[in-house]
Image (cartoon, rainbow, N blue to C red; front, side, top):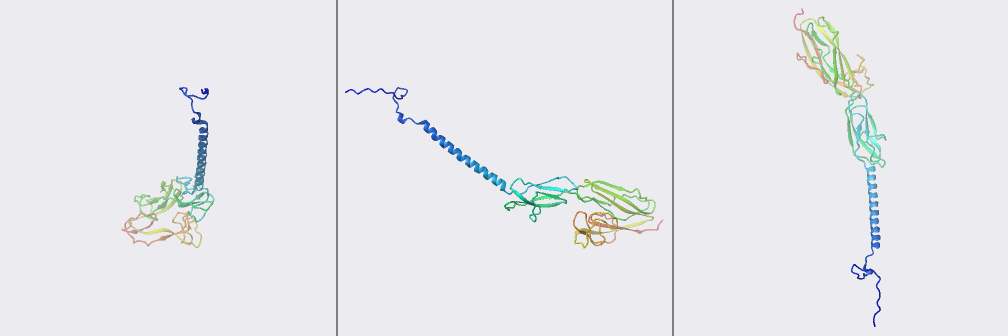
Length: 305
């Protein structure tokens, strides 16, 4: 019996041979599965990135770094300096400028004298940062200082240099101007005269000081002696005033109160001058300084003319 010929209506290959469609890959299904995998991975990656960004932001906001401070000016000044601590990171709520002895909510401190500050920061949870140190050294409120023998004996008719054996000092911005007024001095006539010294530093702090010059008639020899002195902190029974009972001025480091014990530098706590012993009188000239007081005396060496 002849088999009935069945006409094939399915897909064929390039040679006209039937293709078994049961083994042909289903690309649509594969694409769907790949899409599911892709978006699943993308979602997981997004979640991971969000978590990482959250953690980074959290630690940046809560991590207490070593405080960073800036000064309102680094140039020489005779005014106060503002110290400002960066508070932009770490969720900081309090600041200490004395190593943790006291705390304040403000991140600024007004400093009126040169000093070293130990800065700490603390957040709302009570966590304290490591210490940072800031040195304020550009405040110049000290007057220029001048040291000379007073009174000074001079022989009539001799040459006189008012700056010879005179020591000047400025502990801050440096001396800008140094002048001496000798208009009242007459070296041809014996007697007592006063000359004036003027000093100013680069900030504008000024010192004026008078000096007694004794012009003597005759041949003289001059002898010198000295003693050490220093300014030390002390406890005073009475308030220290920046007024001399003698000159009504305040030469820093030299001004005594009426009890002749306490000395105030006009910028710091109560202080006094401690003197050492006088040396023996000598013919050798000595230059006064910020640590050495010098006296001079005149004695007759020959018959007065």
